Length: 170
Length: 401
Image (cartoon, rainbow over all chains, first blue to last red):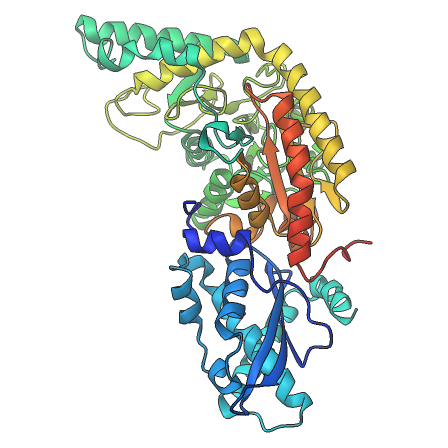
């Protein structure tokens, strides 16, 4: 199979058959990022376990994404890359890995890889928060930035985002 | 079906292949009759003769006189010339132009640029089907108005505008205001020429854009109808071709093809429109019936015979287009991710769609070689695609219930 349009073969493969797609029942952490008004929404679910050495790892991870080809492909790739990884390592994940794994993304779609990384940070943040654990400084910073961006978009598209808020609550 | 040779093309609104009859006719103008229409020798003169013959064919088909049609390179060029050329030639008379909010980007952007040059632009409103109200046009016209530009049919949603009524109202209002010179009426007919009847006199049109590659002619040729007496200034200065309004060596090959394509449309338009309407309505009915949460964009009746446009709840347009492409079907979307822009289509937003709705749009446009079998195939695969994408989407089917 060849690439399509400005997408690489790898992007199309992930888009065609996304890995780890769906919802985890009773997840340990959920990250919900993006906005339907802008055309991309990612929800990432994680289940945390321990490996043989007793380190906390991401035992399972699943995603649900509304969006373009790049949004779906980056979601699929991030789940592959962090599944089974210790939490501290997953936190070091940056979006370039995601882009590299896909053989590149067109510049206009780079924000999709940012969104995928954000969904992961938010899921881990949610987990640590629920466990009443200390939040690492970098993660706290990322969380603040994501919240700020969310607010900015909601301000800009107030009338339109109300509908989405209702959906989020369901 | 994914093999390249079995691809299904449902993007005729974007561009069309050249009709083989057109292709045959044009070949000789690439090698043998290649002359420059400005040359005095026989090579030049045979090209010149063919050019004027082509002009007559195009003019006849719209009810214009031969000296009222000039050839350009694209509909974009024709629209740019119509807006900018009229604006600058009529500065003394006024500085106000009126456009619809669903015009092609070449009209929108030309208007925006004119605004930066000191002209005033009024953007009309449209209803939920994309229809412009002739009464709104009348209200928007003032003593400073020099041009109204409303497209004949929209390229995305296929809605056909009430051009005849708008033409009438502009004429009447110009008389009521007792203007020295009539407010000019321009229409972009790139999507309608060759598909539905057009008569520039009956419709009171002063300038009209038409394009070759939307009607089975080659790319690189288009035309602008300019009614006799309309004051307009050229954008391209040079050798004075096309009655001094469009200097450039005449690109004879695609123009010959354009004229031949017009001839074919003249003969076949009526039957073809009937055939396409049946297929169009089958496609619309099938999609709305088979896919929950599917909505039609544009007017159900006043619509191009070959256009369908939908939006689907909880899925994004580009994903649909690529899934369809993987199954051999070429389509398009006005969603954000369709191109290099991240905003959804200005046309769909003008209809009152929310951005998250506009993001889920899909256009399937039919043409001369579309078969019922192809429509059946789309009706088979599209419901599966939407289902699959909804499975990936966190929203499932909770919008608009």
